[in-house]
Length: 392
Ligand SMILES: *Cc1c(COP(=O)(O)O)cnc(C)c1O
Image 1 (cartoon, rainbow, N blue to C red):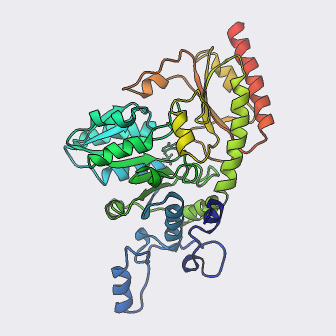
Image 2 (tube, rainbow, N blue to C red):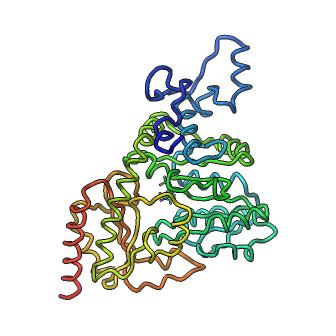
Image 3 (cartoon, rainbow, N blue to C red):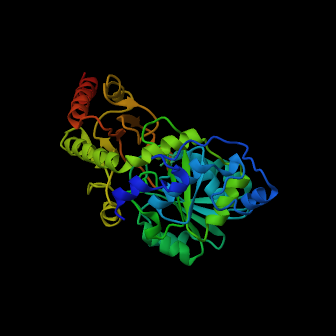
């Protein structure tokens, strides 16, 4: 089946839709049974998409898990109330006191904080590694290394990792390979084809796609699915069927949205590349992006999220650049239909094993589904304000 067809059909088996197009919202804490046999039968099939109790899921969550497993690959998908909960619980499911994990230096900031503030307290140590390390990761693997965690590309500085090279070495040492695949969104990067064992997404971003639901997913290979599923259950992780309904609705347009985000973002990025105020474009499809060759080799496409580094300005003078934009709003997210922008001046402090050398601010944009020409005009005026602020 081709990708577009998968997107339309994923999670829509008759078992869940029961004669309508979309799997309905099944709201339940209590599931009731008429006979002892029915109840025993449900309990015996509790790992097999059978309703037993609300926390174990209802037909809506089963449909969404099926859809995510269809898109990402793997054997099953555990659901969490946020992307962060998916990351922390997936790691927690596989580590114990005395273990060591390898975490990419460009990890999402809360992921890093979790390692430093929660895992450390539990006696699990973390070594941060250069996202571009490739097969050299071998020299950082210790006898007690349990998890190698990747995020590709990094969500601020956009380094693309050599996922198959890292996975190969990690697996040779019996480490579990986890990837934050939020940027790939289950469409543009297929983690299980590249040796990943557990693929995690902030479904909050492109899956939901409309900036109105928090949701996380962790999809595991056959080998690790039972342990991930059991830990998710033991930790009491469950998600609202209303949110899952919206996420399923988001899935249906994921392919066309991503294509348009990609087209718009490439247009804006190409325009930015010509601007005299821009030092470098950090977009995986651009040669200037570290790991661009792995993007070309492993990805099916890009999306709306990228960054660029200015060759002038500072914390103070980017204020007028950012204030007064009409189409871009400032917000700590991405993946919705709307454009967003962030001025990031503390990049160097977000990493410990690699250096960030840029002297001027980094701007991260999420290019939405507006007309790219309107966005370019908005940015053009912003550059005028920046230049005025610096030159006056
Ligand atoms: C937003 C984000 C997360 C966290 O998702 P939440 O749903 O906000 O908790 C994790 N990883 C990446 C790359 C993200 O951008």
